[in-house]
Length: 334
Image (cartoon, rainbow, N blue to C red; front, side, top):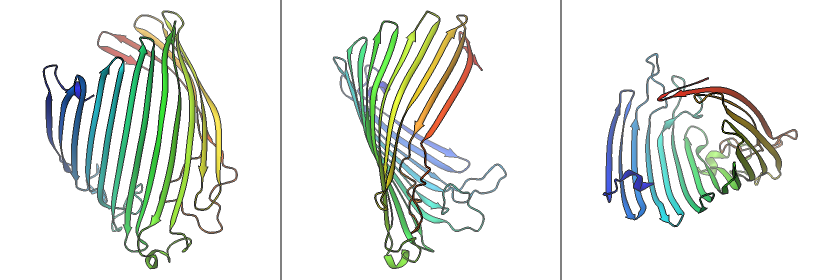
């Protein structure tokens, strides 16, 4: 929270930083923060980074890595008494530069670079309330939008994609005897839109379908979960939980879609062999259905299918075990 940056006798403060990187650029930031009333405060931060194309370990310049980045962050919130707390934050991140056509591919010597701009804005609100020492509520809501555009000037011209995600989470945490329980629900809705932004006469010869210059997909997720941490004995902590997820995807432009749902479980334990030595063991599942696609790859050639009829949700099993030894300020784990 903003007031965490203040001493008890302070009402406001500020920080300024300037950094220089030999490989290769500079970064500077300015942050201000103040107390509004009680333990509620406000802070604002601006960060800028200008970097040139850097050199790899062999001394070769990595083409397409120069960029200018800006970050603006504003946050208000804190403890308002009687067990209530809240925060509201806004973040905007911008980046511009000349990159390869596919930013996740290396750019070879002599390849063309294309101007690109990216922006992400995120608004988040959190609220918490302690009903008592053993029962509390946490609510989260968010809206984030990411936009990227690239000027493929040698072919179809300006092209852009926008992804928007909105959602929230509500959870109750309570203590019942030796049990520490958390239960909650989550909901998220996503939308991706990609489109040609140049004059139709420029992009239509390059499009899969000259009649389709804008493609959209949308999806949503509903999840519900419960998790328990049970202090079975002074030396044994057992954890277990279950989560249900339901995914739904709609191909708004081409028609059709898919949905999937499933459960995932987890079980684990921590056992103190000695006061310094702890054994931990755990098994967990994860489940994920089909979500919206990459904004630059959702266009489909006429006559081709957009979704495989054999498409299945992803399922993961994870098992791990370890030992941790700690004494005073020394901690070792394997």
